[in-house]
Length: 379
Image (cartoon, rainbow, N blue to C red; front, side):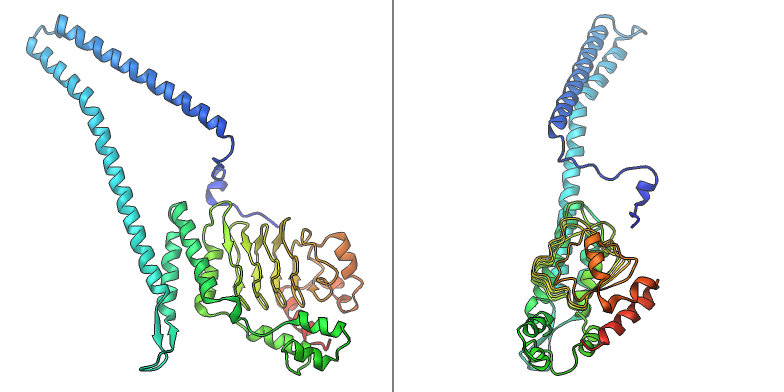
């Protein structure tokens, strides 16, 4: 996969350096700069004393005493006025910083107020519903803050992630658990009993998979929050905490940079990831059934312990660092353009249900149709 570069990188400027490295060198440079400033200050003071002495003894070139006095006065005003000018500049900068912080606090307060707006479901009713227009407006206000200073961006990201965790907790996920289904089948249960144990009803599992994936979607405000996180600038080394969330059917679009995400114990069934670059992502105990990964890249360090990948699909992905267990790769769908480790690829090529994919080269639409047809088969 090609790495995306910013406009400044195109001009030849590199990314922001990591100031946390080589701290000893930073201290040395700071001491050297202090010495340079001290030398410049001493030289300037010596020059001022010398000039004052010459004026007092000789006057100026015209021999006019009043001109000499005027020049001495100007030098003294410059010498003693410079610190006050610098002090005024520092005070103005502090006032500007305070005004910016106050403005930032006002924006945060207004955004959080909108994010909590509700309305009654009916007159005199105690039940309420979220006001979607106000909440989405609050999320876009946080998006604007992500474009400012790094510390403001981090606070905005944390607020958006907290909003998702609060308004889409894992407890709200729809009932869908193929892991229970396969466990029950392995114990010798009939298909009817296995479907019932998993809360999947009596429909054939393939038919239920396809229909369930098409219609499950997150709330509009949750999808908007996800899009803002994906499209906004993310401070280097920072990530998203979306653990214990219900993100079934969510769409994660292209990211600017590789992102670290905590999906621990999240419900992601039917989610779609487009051009997404996973960096040290935590999928531990998450349910990724029926997920669609299009042109995604998985870095080393992806935690997929106890993760369920049943009926997930991989299209043109770099999955060479995604080390799936035998049970995790038993029910996945893929195309021939996805890169797997040699061991996993050898295993996938032995599956009869994937025998047709190694000879075909699909575009995205053809791949999704083939995937849905594969889902609809009786299993």
